[in-house]
Image (cartoon, rainbow, N blue to C red; front, side, top):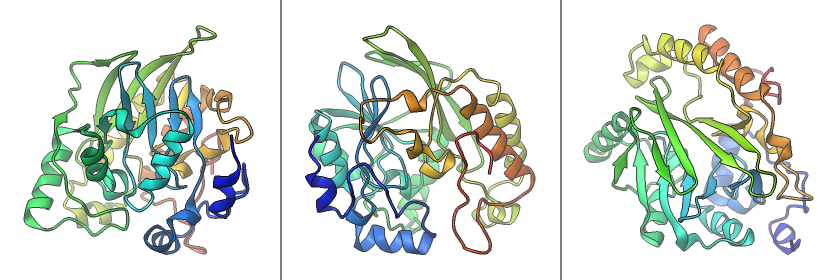
Length: 309
């Protein structure tokens, strides 16, 4: 792996990455004006899964199905060139992306979806309730301005929580959790290592951002969704999960699992304790009606790998 890309973006090969965990206003400025300063190289986090987001905030996962590529999350238009470079760097062609899976209808998860769809012809998936909210806001001109990208798009298909979806080597089971959005999507599936034959259970919860009750009311969401999230997290914490995929890096200090000296090594992400601890940490925050923000610094509080503060 060549080091020139890291030097070109002002990032030493294999870290340190000094722009992790920035206060939102600083992050927003860099996304809009200096996306290269947020660059992080691609790394493998499961046998056929790589984080290729190209920047440090929202994760974006490339899945090699054996029958085409799936991209889970399309976070940032301004850093899309870095995401495409990341995909090429690990030996794939962005043109082979056939499916874009969005976890929910927020701009930091779909900012580059339209551009990727235009470039590849990929189909965009979203939950039905989030699709309805997105289309209502899009068509009424009330979409929230986002530094991640403003290009509107059409949703091609919706997930079905009663029927698993099989694409190549992956079979996805979907659950929906109202709270962070009307129906944030939770993915559960398995991935088998071709060399070792070991199969890993994988999970990703797309809607873990914590709202206070006042914020729920401001967004027009029922306060009862708070209890729905608590109930969902209580059940989900019992799931048997080998590899937890984070929708945002700060949720599990996710990048710390990467081996930047050997980016193909995903062993740092194999940990059965992370999922349950993450669910319990988020449930605690919802019960306490707080966001994970340090009031002194304005920075996001980082979850350690064990899910604790």
